[in-house]
Image 1 (tube, rainbow, N blue to C red):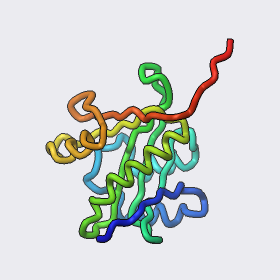
Image 2: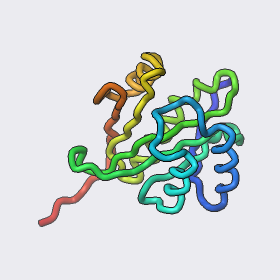
Image 3: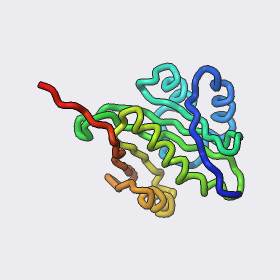
Image 4: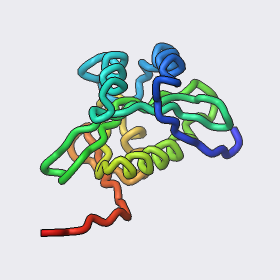
Length: 162
């Protein structure tokens, strides 16, 4: 697979059918931790309430290659809005894993524009050290046995007024 750029396309009503078709096709990948709700229930909740989270289609060279689901929450400890990556699902194409760092960079850019200050991901314990090492190499720090987090740096300045 040649080096390709990756873009994240926010799932809006225009892309709902495509998104749910992909969710049915690739949604239950053994990627991240077991969700509390099914991915379909989570996706429906996020698409109804953008303040709860969002979904993006992953596109490269004009083709949709997967999707990302992110839940938002506010954390006093973190000092703002945190984006929890529920799922990154990719097509089963040879070499597709090489796109994952580009997907994470794009996701980080998208989240920083939405004033998210930290990304979190929870890994299944059965996945071993390889998946954890990938996220650590990308800048995530281990917070517990299966939770990793990365602070999102922003150039945005907040004026202080009293």
